[in-house]
Structure formats: structure tokens, C-alpha cells
Amino acid sequence: TEVTEEDTDFIINLRTNKALNSLSGKSISPEEHLRWLKNYYLRDNDFYWIVKDIKDNKRIGTTALFDVDKRSNKAESGRTIILESYRFIVFDVFYEIMKFAFDNLGLNKVYGKVRFSEQKILNFDKKLGYKVDGILREDWWDGEKYIDFYLLSILKSEFNEYKLNLYPRYLDILKSIS
Image 1 (cartoon, rainbow, N blue to C red):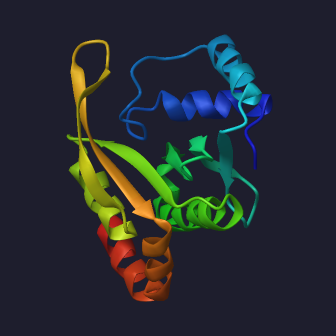
Image 2: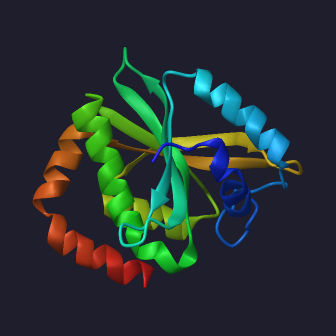
């Protein structure tokens, strides 16, 4: 489901929860979020979704594809924050984002960034099929220091191959996040 103004409190709670979001630097007000959301609505290269539990339609997280570059057929994946009790759903979220990116948008590549300090997330992303492309040194200022990131990507061809080995890989991924 596309993010709406009604999701403001939910998103603020996710973004400011340090246990769920390591990039959370400071709390934001509803007004700040709504200002950002208003600008988001003006973009035609950004998809920001609320992730819902299919059983009861409960909001359980967010995810996005943004900076969609139609000339180079690539986009960045991120803004993924999932409630702790739904961690197992991350695999399904990844799968649906990639299907949307590659099948609906016709992209060739999806990339993302992972902080150096987040080895568990890096290892998880590698199991999903992402490859490390390089390092972005001092790429983000957190208010106190510059942060280095790994730059990761997955190509359409890699994702298509990944789908062939889906079930055994899925079991391996579930074990790694349990």
C-alpha cells in the first residue's frame, strides 16, 4: 500500500525506534514528516509503501524503491523497517520489491547501502543475492561523525537465477534471522 498522511504516526514510531532503525538520528515531528511526504508526492521516481500483514491488514513496516533512473534502468532500495515480531517477512518484502523493479518497471539493477557496522544486515543481503560493489567512504554525516557504507546491488539476471533456487535459499535465510 502506498504511504499516506494517515501513516504518519506509524512511520515516525518506526523511524525513531533505535531497535528497528539504526539510521535513526533524531526524532522527527509529524509536521516534518508531512513536509517530507508532500515533496515525496511530487516525485515520479520514488515508490514508498506500507508493508501489511496479509492476514489482518495490520501495518508492520515500510519499504521503498527510490531514485528510479529510467535511462540507466536502476533504482535504490531502502527505507525498509519491519516490526521485530515480523522479521521473517523481510524475505517476502525483498521478493516483491524485486519483482516490481524488474518485471513492472523493467529495471536492470537495484542497489542499496549498508553501514559498515551492520555486518548482520550485510550478510543477510548477500544471502538474498546482493553483491558488494564497493565502499562509500564517509558517505553520510550522522550529526557526530561520518559513516562509511557498503554499496550493494543485484541485477535482474541474478534475481532471475535466484528465483530458481528459491526454496532452499529461503530456508537458509530463515535460519539466519531466527
